[in-house]
Length: 358
Ligand code: ASP
Image 1 (cartoon, rainbow, N blue to C red):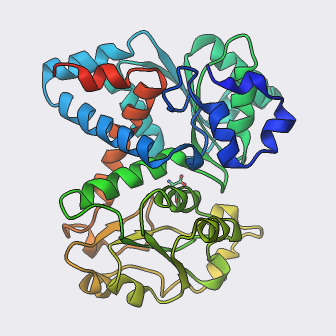
Image 2: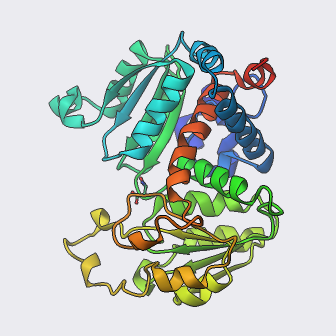
């Protein structure tokens, strides 16, 4: 249960994201989220705990005995995957994470196949899911919907946790968790993530993964962020304001090659043209200088990594795919482990998994 029963919707929705955090935590007081809605819920200690648990689950799952132990951890729980926006990796990795932990799952992947098509409100749909399931993993084109649903559910007769798997152009907290997990793993034996330079490139205006990851990176010491994009798609003011307020070093730039030369990680993103206000508007923007190919690869340091939340179009040339610095395939698989770690923690199984004999 979260403490959302202690505050009305108007008052809660008006709070700054960081001030919302305590209302979303597990009542047990271990700092873990009950509802996972945005990146501002995670501080460094929590990120380190989740990365450690993901490593542990990954290791335990290697043996048949270990995998069977994990499959029993949440065998008494059911999760609903409610995705009213396209998804491949986020859907499948959450599904696989549930399977690792033994949760039974149900799914709606198209609102047209649910009663929402008959005019049912989101509130009623979600309340329906909570009658049959113990957790809702949801993706929606509507910014803020997951938050509203979390409040509604916490104040209903059957409160269950909500996990935001992508909300509008706004936040994608579990993608940011897997991005951090990937960065932490990549630099684990090379001095860590502190003090690194991360370059974001592409559609930074509408990419929700960028907003969430940019925030999570502020938990690490001296991480510099460079935003490389065409002017029309540059990083939005709210992201820049957070960095300025936190005293994080950042740069807004338009030359990918110069940024790659000093980058430890290059985070490429696709053009998010599904949000175009008029059809074809993005196609008119010159994005030709914001692609990673053989020339950029030659400029990247030997320990540098290339990341992408995927799906990719042509912003990373396929000639980069087999380079050991291309991290996007491993990044995608990391999503399964960190999501398993998060789900296990939401249900209070962090300690028992960490301490189990496998
Ligand atoms: N898969 C990511 C998302 O859902 C990135 C993207 O779609 O470009 O936001």
